[in-house]
Structure formats: structure tokens, C-alpha cells
Image (cartoon, rainbow, N blue to C red):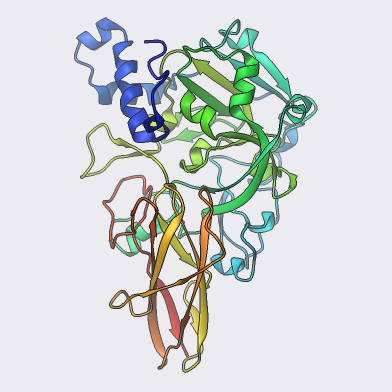
Length: 432
């Protein structure tokens, strides 16, 4: 149903609302005979995920052969800055103590499904095509943008966090006794940076965006991702045109520097507030459609399945509220002395309104003092004093409340992917 999303309000900036509308319209356009034999919405979504109903870009477009011989991550990963999990590297929160508002590139977390790819900017082209454009319905007649073309377009900068959907996954096991498979992030799968690039909406309009366009499907130049023996192809995940035009950026700089390879060089998406999988790195093509699009990365993966969720799953939506201490895990502090604890809190819903801290495992709470201002797409820095009177083990807890009055709960429902852990995290320390 072309144009279904056109003219709708900001509710489509929320992925849960978007998913309901998109799925309804996608099913309405599905082959009548297929629907007539009793295929459920769940079966259709699973089928879409297994088959990867999206155009796949060959592993060319400026990708260097050197990408096949490098390690999964290019930049140095010193153990005082990172916990490394194969092709993923989690920032150690103590590495942010004494840093400014932004996460320096040398300690910004790395998340990918296979490895960092090396791309030659001189031969790289962004290919934009689809039924939602004038005159470029297929990739064979795509509108192409070179790296220089993007640099020549009006530039914009935003400060925003990017966060892995599985950030905090380990706490499902350690705090709720329900371990979830996947990278066992604590809270270091997040980072705030100053991104500079061109608005995605600017590129789409230059490519010939029509009023009938409803969905876009950006795709990375990653090697194909194989999950449980099924080749799901390159990373790609749909966005509503509404979100694409609202605040999504095609970024080519990070903290004032050229985007590094591990973070998406030459160009990546930054989709403020949405889970990190939406901020596709190493973008090579963007499909623009006048009908809803799907991929394995929003039907099989990055969807909430579990005992409290519908059989066909619940879409992952904006990032939830989280807080972290700038302290080593199982760190030590001197007893009988005053300590100034620091931390940061953030939410996909907007600025943080209040942060409370407990130094006794949640029995009592005190308000932390905010440091500086909070930024809508960023985080709030805070501090609080604490004097552990006696030696021994302590559990620190921090909980934040955002502008929507969303507050971190004591526990969250389990999901099989270990996504969106937003409960208060127990941070162990020892006073000596």
C-alpha cells in the first residue's frame, strides 16, 4: 500500500509503533494465496528473516582485500581500556574517569557481526535505489554518490550516543538467573561522540525521493553474517522514511576526526535514540521503497522473544534508561575515607531528569549531583560522595529517571536475545 506512512505524526519515530503499521501493511500486500493457506504473521516474519527478503550487495564497492587478512578489530585494544570478546570490544567504565563529555575514539566500544572492513574511499560509492525514488527502481540504475559528493553537501554535527541493543546482557544471568546467549556486555557497549556528516534526508531528496516512499533499507559492506548455519547476508535493517528525514545522519567524522575503520569508515548511519543495529556502519547501499521492507535483522534477530512476549516477538524500540559508575568492576576503595563517585546516565527517550545512588545494595537512596548539562541524544554526568565506614564488600546501585518519567526498575522481563537490559545494575566494590 504505497504511501501508508506519508503524513503520519511523530509516533512513527518509535519503532514499536512503526513495526505494527509496517507489518500490517506488509501482510496486506503479501501474496493472497500464501495468506490463504494459514501462514501466520509469525511464520511470514520468520520466512522473511530466513530468506533475507532484501537485495544483497556483492562484496565489492571499494572493500579492500586487506580486510580478509586483518584481525576482526583494527585499532589497539589495551586491556586497561577494553574487555575484548572476539570481534567486539567493550569499554571499561573506569577508563572514562576524568574524561570529558565525549568518549575518546581510542576507548569507544566496537560492535560488529563479523569484522572491521577496510574501504577505499576513492572507489567507494553509495548506491541509492528503489521504488520510492524517481527513475531508480533497481540497483542497476541506482543514483550514486561518491565520498567527495557527500563532503560537498551541506554538513551538520550532532552529539549522540550509540549503544548496542545487548548492552547489559550479562546481568540477565548474574542478577536474574536467566543467562542469555551472545556477547556478555556489562554496560560498556555504549559511547557518546560528536558526529559530523550529511543528513540522510538531504541525500534521499537529491536521489529523487517521492511522496510514496515509506521505508528505507540501509545495508553495510560487512561480510555475510552466518547465524546457526543460515547465511543472513550483510547487516541491513529498515527505517521509516519519517525517522530518516527527522534526525538520521550519514556520518563521516567522529569527534572531529575522519571516521575510523572500526567505526564505519567511510560513512555510517547515526540513528539517535534507536538501538545500535540501526546505525549501520560501512554503508554501501540504501534501498528506498513504497512498500514496507523487512530483513533478518528485525524479524529473527533484534526482536524480543520470551515467556512474557507474543509468539511473533516484540520489536526492539528506543534504548532504555541506564546508569553506570566510572569505577572498575570489583574495584577497591579505602575504608574510613571520603570518596567522590562519578557516573553517567542516558536514555533513548531524551534527557535525564534525576539520578539516585545507593551504596548499601538498594536499601537507601540519595540524589546524585548533576555535572554540567544533559543533552537530549547524549548522557548526564553526575557525582556523589561516599564514605565506607568499615572494610568489606559493598554493592553500589544507580538509577536514573528521564524526561518521560521512565525510571530504571529492579528487574526486567527476560528475552532470549538478552536485549535492552534496563534494570538497576549491581556494581560490586570492596572497601579495604
